Length: 344
Image 1 (cartoon, rainbow, N blue to C red):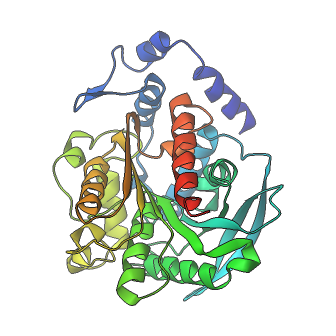
Image 2: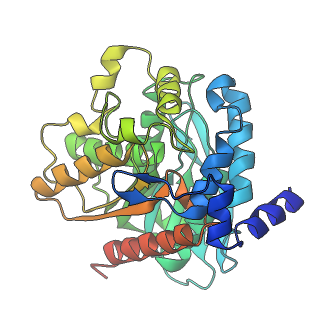
C-alpha cells in the first residue's frame, strides 16, 4: 500500500498538461464547469475498474476503503485521536474523538458521520478530514460509525445518528465539549444524516445543533434530472452507484418520501440551525444540495453555501493527492470555526 500511495502521489505531481493527455486529451466540461486535471485523471482511471455495483456490499466496502487510502492525506499530527464508543439503539457504535493536542478547556464540538450511501464507509473514510476539522476549526470532533445496509435497512442509520447526537449533548463534558455548542455534520450519506438530525431535533423538541455541516448531502432519494443526469457518469459517484446504494438502503418505494430519507421534502425548514452546505461541480448530488441550501435560505436559516466547481464527489477524502481538495477542506474547516465560535 505504501508503494502504491507513493506512485499515486508522484503521478499527481506531473504537469497538468501531461495529466490531461493521460486523462483523454482535453479538459472535461459539464454544465459550464471544467474539471480539475487530477480529478479527471482519477475519473478516467476509475472507469477502467469494476464498478462497486458489480460487487457485494462487503467487497465494495473493502475496495472503496483501499481506494480512498491511496488518495487521502495523513491525519494532522497535532490532533489527538482516541477510539471510543457511543451507545446506539442496536448496540455500541464505534467512534473516534479528535481534539487539538494542546487544548486545555472544553471546546465547541461537532458530531460527524461518514460518507458511503449508508452501505459502505467507516471511521477511516473521514479520518483525515475530521483531524483537519479539529485542528483548523479548533473544536472537538466526535466521528460516529453507524449501522450499514443491507444488513441494517432504513431507518437504522438515522436512529443511530439521532442517538449519537443526543448522547453527545448529554455527555459533552466527558468528551471535552461544551454542551449547547455542538454541531452536527457529515459528507454525502453523512451529510444526509446530519440534515435529518437537525430536522428531527426541531420536530421532537430535542437539543438543537449549534450548526449543521452538509457536504454534498443526499437530500432527496427520488431526485431525477439536472446534475443527476449531466454528472451521472462521473467518478466516483455515478447515477447507477447512487441507485445501488438506495436499493440496498431503502426497502419500500414509499420510504423514499419519508422525511427521514428525503429531508428536502419537508414543508417547513424554518427554525433550523445555521447551515454550511457544500457541493461539488462534478457530482450527481450537486443540484439537490444546492436546492436544500436555497430552501434553507428562503426559510430564514443562515446559510453559507459553497460549490467547488472543479471537484467531484468525495473530495474530502482526496486531500493527499488533489491540492484543490486540500484547499477546500481547509476552507470548510474555517467555515465551521466561524459557526461554532460565533458566540464565544
